[in-house]
Amino acid sequence: LQKNFLDNTLIFAFSNKVEFETRHSPGVLEEEIALDSALGVSYRFAPHWYAGAEIRYQSDFLNPQLFDEAGNPGFDDKGYELGYKRSSFKFSDFRVGSQYQYGTYFGPSLHYGAEKWWFTGSLLFQVQGGGSEGRNPSIINGKNWDEHERYHIGLIFGRPF
Image 1 (cartoon, one colour):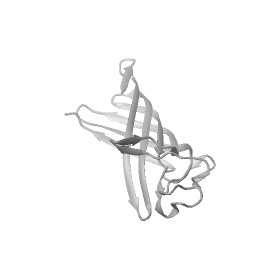
Image 2 (image 1 turned 90 degrees about the horizontal axis):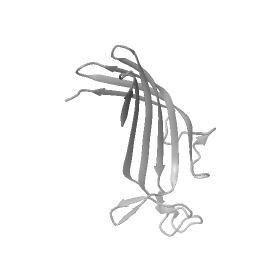
Image 3 (image 1 turned 60 degrees about the horizontal axis):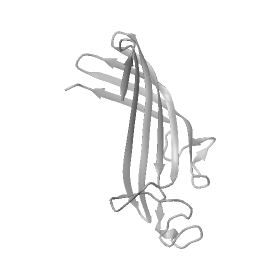
Image 4 (image 1 turned 135 degrees about the vertical axis):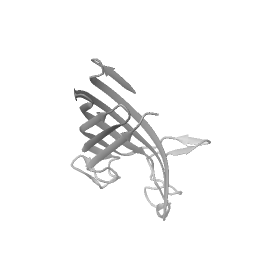
C-alpha cells in the first residue's frame, strides 16, 4: 500500500507478507507461519531522488516437533513442547502456533526513480528481538541472534511494464 502527499514529494508505504514454511531435518519437523511487515516514509530531496526510513517486523509462529524428545518431561508423546501451540497450514488442520521468535529492524533507505526503471536500497539494524521465554538461548540483551540477523541490506530494482 502506498500513499503520496505534497505533490508526490512525501511518500508513505506499507507492505505485509505471510510465509508458510515446512522444514525437515534429522529428528525435527517445523511447520512455521511467518509474518513480515514493513512501513516506510521517504522524501524527495532532488529530482528522482528520495531519502527515507523504514521499520520492519518479522515474527515466526511454530512449535517444532522434536522426535527425539517424544515422551520426555516437558514434551508430549509426539515430540511437541508442552504449553505451546503448533502451527499447521494443512487445509484440514489450519492453526497458528505460539510466537517462537521475532525481530524488529529500523534504518535508512535511498530511492532513485527514472522514467523506465527504479531502485531502492536500505540498511536496517535490529533494534529489538525476542521470543518465547526460556525457549531460545540466542536472545541476548533484547536482541535475537538465532534466525534474525544484526542487519538487513536490501536492494530492489524495478522496471514498469
